[in-house]
Image (cartoon, rainbow, N blue to C red; front, top):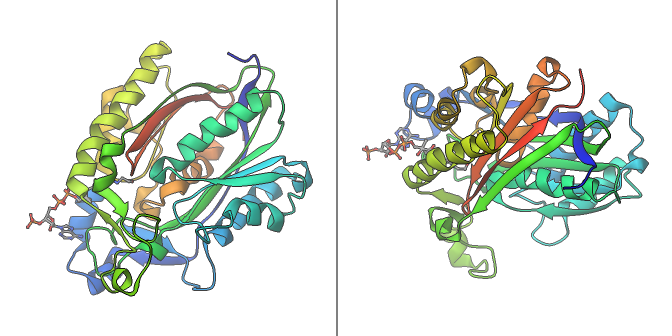
Length: 331
Ligand code: UT7
C-alpha cells in the first residue's frame, strides 16, 4: 500500500428545481403514491426540464458549488473524472467539456461508465491517481440526466429515476485520512436485467429502434432487486469484517439510493441503526451516478474529521462494491 492516502476534502452538489412528485406520476401512468412509497421510499425526483441542457449542465453546477465553497482556483485541478450513464454525447467526453467550462484549464478529463456504480468506481480511480503521488487535486463528479433515457409511459422505471449531480475533490492526506479499503465486483451475466438495448455498437440506432422505444432504460426490477439486496449487503459486511470494524465503529453508511428496502437490508446486515444511514431517496429518487455525492452534500454538516464511512452501491452490468473511507475534515 502507498503511504499517501486519498482524502475527500470538499463536496459540491446540484439538483434542478422542477419536482416530479408521485401525484404528477399518477397522471402519467397507472400508479399511486402508496405503491411507490411502500415499494421504493421515493416521494419526488428532480428533473432538468430544459431540452437544450444535458448532463454537463448538472455537472458544471455541482463543480461550481464545490469551487465556491472551497474557494479553489480551478486552474489547480489536474484531472476531472465524470461518472455518468447519460453523457452529453456518445463520443466527445462530457468531463472534458466540464473541465473547460469550469476553468480547469490545466486538467485532463474523461468519463467513466459503470451504471449506478459510477461514483463508487470513480472513487477508486481517483484515489489511485492521488496515491501514486503524481497528482494532488482530482475532481470526481457523478452526474446524470436520467430523464433523457426514461420512458414516461413505463411505470416500472419512470417512478424510480431522477436528475442530479454531485462533486468531490480528492487530495493527498499526510495523516492517513481518506480511502482505506475497497472491494469492487462485477458480473456481466447481469446485463440482460438492466440495460438500454439500442444506440450502441451492438444495435445502432435505426428508425425501428426509435419506433420500438429501444433507447430507453428497461429493467427486470425483481431480478435486479434480488441481486442488489444480497450483494450490496455482502460486500459492505465483508469490508467491515476485514477492517475489523464493528457496527459501533462505523459512523455512517453511504448507500446508493435505488430502493429504500435495499438500503434497509444492507444496514440491517451491517447491524447499523437508522441514525447512521444516509438517506435522501425520498426527495431525489435514484440519480444513478449522483446518489453518493448528493448524500455527502446533504449530510456534510454532520460529518466529523475521523468519522468512518462505508460507501456501497449496486448497478447495471452488474457492477457493485463497497469502499471504506475516513472523513478528513470538520465542516
Ligand atoms: O440502481 C440500479 C439498480 N436498480 C435497482 O436496484 C432497482 C431494483 N428493483 C426495485 O427496486 C424493485 O424491483 C421495483 C421498485 C422496480 C419494483 O418493485 P417490486 O416490489 O419488485 O415489484 P414487482 O416488479 O414485483 O411488481 C409487483 C406488481 C406487479 O403487478 P402484478 O404482476 O403483481 O399484478 C407490477 O406490474 O406491481 C406492479 N407495478 C406497479 N404498480 C403500481 C410495477 N410498477 C408499478 C407501479 N405502480 N409504478
